[in-house]
Length: 134
Image (tube, rainbow, N blue to C red; front, side, top):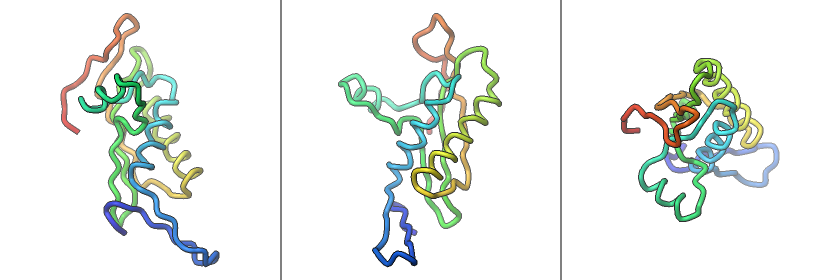
């Protein structure tokens, strides 16, 4: 398995192979995570924020995908709404990402790690974040 492309071969069909770029998995995981109630925002970097201010949405923001021989490892960095049960929301994020990847790519994630990097209060526009490099 290549570090840049995930290859799937269907021996029965004989039609060829299917290649999925890690960026595609990032987008699927990012959308699935942001759909969960209680997730305030996904964490991005400075470049991502600049791109979004110019009008382009980055759905892979806050998601890091690692492909290895063991499988797919997904790390999600997000801020949550104040007052939600963090363990419950994190579990829903993991379940939603696993299900979305299975439905859309027929792949199972080996790991889905949720990193809560901030809390967003109702009267606050931006999250209070724990400063950490991804």
